Image (tube, helix red, strand yellow):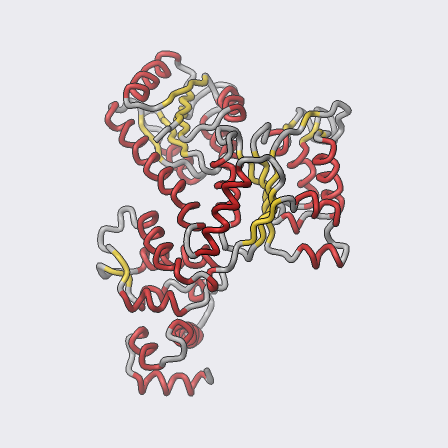
Length: 428
């Protein structure tokens, strides 16, 4: 693999040693003396692994981690802590670091951690291919992705929640000539309306009360890379207008600023909404819609591509089964349950199901009962009574087994007569 590693440490001698160990192992290595310099390098070049010391001037490793986890979510961060700084290491892991190393450490330990990160990167790169390669319909989408990657025209990705829209966006970026540049996701549905303008466009020093220093927005952070607008349908009309002007004029105007900043990023947008309907009801600007829809990728829901369920299940078992030595695969009856279900939450719901089955299962294989227990609905309300949980379990089993009570009773581990009695009792 062509892995790029950024080493961040304020001690030149430590950077030199780390550079030597990693480059001798075949990795491409760059250096930064602190978090601020690291962010500048990240904006200009793609990195796969970030190896950062916790204690540094200007911006320490924890602050750096907080900055990169939003703009570069695929970056694997390994933090280095001094002896006895376990609280720092624990906090880093809680904030999303991949792993930590306690100084001093052996070169073999360093390389082992990096190799583990590389294994996860390999799986992540395979994930997009796994999600989008299946039946003929998905292979046509794969061909469209390859074509879209070669041009810098805007791309609009449509599909239900959980179908893999961000994976497709990342795959377009990965296949593009500028794949070493930044990929900046913008979650339009998660950002409060009062903050989204500042998040997108940034501000200058003194632009408003509390703006004690200039702040770069997400659009500027994308540079010449890719700006991905997830759930673009949630963007308010006022912000739609500003985004349209930015795309048309190719300039960013920070809040309170007079000097325009050149905007060169490729735009990819995604939504689970029917934008034709949103346009007809005046909730989405028609001119922005057609600006974004130069290339359109429509992802079908998982219920329309069930042939992919075994492939996706095995992929999720490999990704999330690390350390789960007791579980080696999935039983045929459990796979049948997965195939019988319509997956309203699509690929994301299937992944969640497999993760919970791995966590809760005790047999060498995932069983139908594990799939049933993995139903997120069972764990959504800690105040639910036993009877409510029992009713939900029976309903879920009947859905998974397509109404076949004999199979549902087997999945639940109860007799068929008991199941009939409970179905009558709960009025199912």
